[in-house]
Length: 328
Image 1 (tube, one colour):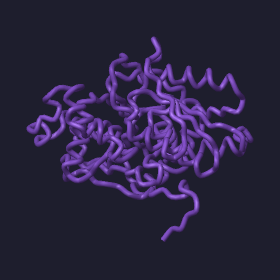
Image 2 (cartoon, helix red, strand yellow):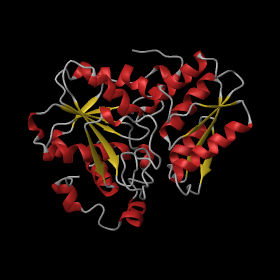
Image 3 (tube, one colour):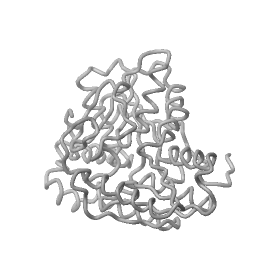
Image 4 (cartoon, one colour):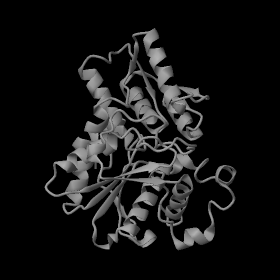
């Protein structure tokens, strides 16, 4: 039985769900939501804070500030509370209400951007606000998850090796693309591994990460309106893009089997199942990463009125849910 004194010391890193009985294709889903921050972002948050402390960038009088769609903000809120730092999270109106309240409960301040930037969307507007704020007072320390190497080295050191230990014959890994920290850390690790592993990035339709046309995206977590500086496409073998309606159907199909996951997981699972259906994945050892759980999405992804207002009355068509998810 582990005994801890700080919340960031605990993270369940060894839990997988085989989705074959739900979707018809074997896919080992690595569950990253079982820690006190509730998501995979704990790893990057901890790495970036520890680097800032080591380099004396972060001192007792500092105020952490970061742009986040939600999960990194929660992770930094938790770490800041544990270490005695102040923290300001700059998010936007798509951030789940429960996530904002959680950050505030942990003692953080939350600033909500309500208008997107003309060129960079909500992400560009958030970054511009953080950049301007940081220039006004040197007490503000912007870790900048979009460029910080700790965002990918955390997964190169922890996430990818954990997958490799469980699946020494891994053939394909599906990773959602947001800041691309998880994607780049895992992709770099498996490029150096003892056997080839196909790295499939899963992105949202409407994201510009891999050169797609910008479009409306209402589910936070994956996709960007500004190309991520951390991304190196040389490490990515394929990109799968998923419509948000298919994200929602994947989430609800998982929930109807007793697994409540977040929107990012629905996107990754939908993209992975479409890819496996097209590539006859019966003989492949395939894994995917589930960044978080679903409780923070009860007012959005799992709320009927919200879904129907944004995606139409047929988004949860029962026949389609019963028959399976469309190939992406």
